[in-house]
Image (cartoon, rainbow, N blue to C red; front, side, top):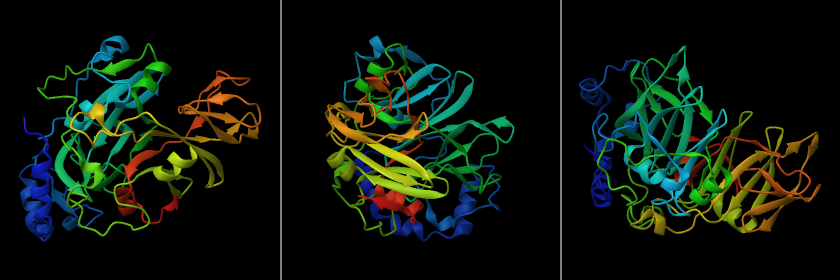
Length: 375
């Protein structure tokens, strides 16, 4: 099976990006029609913005029949700092390690009663999950091999509509202009997952594909070693370094991004977003999947949590309590990065999570230039 090129190949591809971007829309769609049955007459973006990432359609194979193992078994090959995507629905908690997602980018799954797609675009550091139920059917997603603003373009196998992963929006085909429903799926450390969900399920390395899971295909990528960002032809929004991570939120028509540099310094940032009192937490202990040769050795970039501060009719005020924990001033209860009260009068209570993405700034800034940045 073809997989995403390694970092050397990515650099070479990036060097000829300007040439690829000049391909006419008509010649591009002729080539695409050989692979897809997509209705190319419907599109919401210029075809010139879409480029090949190297692999063909499904060249990066999605996982369509995921298998799961338990925490004890997964602990043999996951380090405490390994980044995993958490999806918790219907009393079931599942972890999807980035060391597996990096090689497949899409997992089509069913958690309890909900069909979900868990996705990861390494080039944009976007780990996002969607409800696969759409327009009266359950969609199955695969990789197109195409990118826009360096971000994964998925397609559904029912209509072959192309979907922009970072924003969950159809951009070419029958569902162009439509949006998928996001599912809360924070990117956290393996240690956080197993402490919160000791009986949880973990995506198995037994995927049916031979891959060197745990090895980073993009070594040094998020440190800016090279002409970065790869496959990105626009001028990045200069309010932050292109490769800085942000916790990005869309709420009640407002787009806000919390810079990780500010979160790492303050640990807690509160903000009103579209009339909702919001708190963003940051905790250390999560490795970058895009740094060292071995993911487990990646530098600590931490993890974020975003929540509604309202509970039982009052708005809580938070402050850092050390060791990745937080306290509210109203009751003195202690909370973790998942918004759970773990000690104090409110122990056992849960803040309402707000769906957010952990993106590289250049990508979020390209798709949402109107974003209000908190730094």
